[in-house]
Length: 93
Image (tube, rainbow, N blue to C red; front, side, top):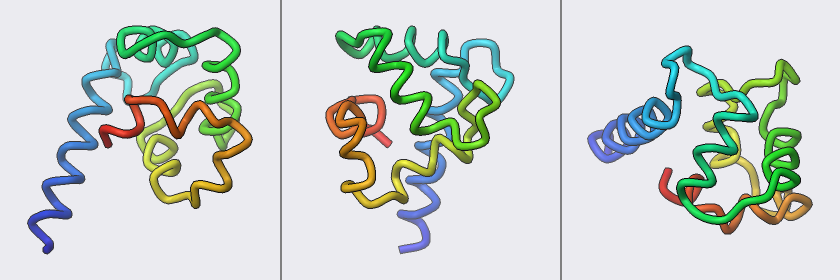
């Protein structure tokens, strides 16, 4: 069981790093938008809504800690955004 959890954690870290093009450990709105556009169609409005939802410290970036938070939230709390539930970027983690 611990091995599964460690493996999942390593996968999430790998995925976060893969979509962190400059390696600074955080994702800007532009980086998020570029990442999501490679995975499918996304509008600027949807990217902004996602940033508003995920960037809890309002510094304009998604840190790894904030990246982990949507996985820990109840799905009903994400319903205001809606897009998060159907975004491959979050379903792969």
